[in-house]
Length: 482
Image (cartoon, rainbow, N blue to C red; front, side, top):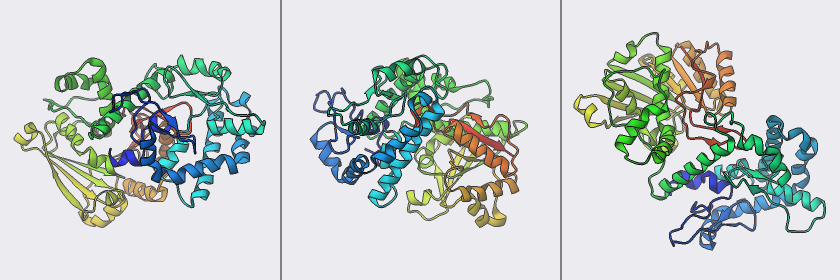
């Protein structure tokens, strides 16, 4: 089990559809060759375990969280129920904005109450238990809200509980009536944030399959699926008329499997591959001709870099594989998070391995790491700073986190006229970030946001604190500018 999974359990565990310790899903065949049956934690009624052994193994970490979750209903019933008084069901059913506002208000109240109880900021796994708490697709009620309302009416146990959609098991209903009210939108209407033409229910099924595969990879100690073709393209070809299907032939040659498995692996692989492909898309759009494809060295700066760029370092060779006239790829990774990942001294220069074809042609890759925000790196280099061919910030969150630091970086990018691309997880973030860039004086390229990224990951995940909607790694372009 990798460290990130321990810190941030997979979606099926967050919503009680898999064991919170070993991540084994219900009805799966466990190592003892038995069908897994899940039981909820009797304290918090929020997480599930496949047996007493896993519950005991997880108890030291879960104990305080369990007690805080249990106290939510006991000490905060009036505050939690207030959202259901201020917004009645008639107004929120069928109105996603109002429904998500109700859920957000409840989730924020839960977060603040737990922080007071625990005496500090919540861990990632604790935040995610709130963010992905199962809620009714029609009205936003959770099991906790259903219990509090039943208690208010002096009803006796057993209290009503949410039921999962039998077709996807990732969406929930609090009653048969609300199931009927939400069924058409859930099953028949194409999801706005999902894959083209698929309903939320159909997209949920893909998410469920992908979550199980990710758990299998983690259980086999493989970590996230990271793949890039070994082939080297003979010439540069524009990305404008291509899409993710362009990788199908390569994947079939290298991973001979049935087509359904290849499609699923491509979704998983697109998470990491979206980074080099978005870099190439940015270079193609921000250059007036293809002169950049014939440069001796491509110099790329990654802003706000973190663990994913380190873990998927080999994926960036796809840039050399698609631009065969470039001899050297120099990737500079900048971000305070890097200092928490490695104890190495910075700046750190790392010559990277290349495939046999690139090695034979003496093509090189070099990664240079700085544990500083980008504007501090530029200041530190002074007169030695070399303007890159492209600067890129993957899923920066610049409208939500470290806002002042990102504002300083944007000023440097504008002053030095550095060609830049920012990506985001969803439309809301991309629009907010685009507004920040415009306010900083940037003129945004029309094909680089705010809008969907044609090379964003197709491995979708359910949005937290919502009952509809999906997000994906680099799924949206916030903006690109020179």
